[in-house]
Amino acid sequence: MKWLGLVVNITIKDGIIYNAKQLLADVIRIMDIAKEAENFSIVQPGMKN
Image (cartoon, rainbow, N blue to C red):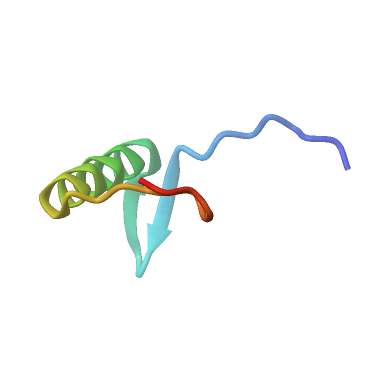
């Protein structure tokens, strides 16, 4: 199957239309704030800090 290069601009959930790009940006921002508040860091398995 060949990739058609489609881009999702909107998404619909429960009849509400959302701007997909803005929604993604908001989720990334919220996750960054939460990670900073929890002092979260990803450590590769088997590696010591």
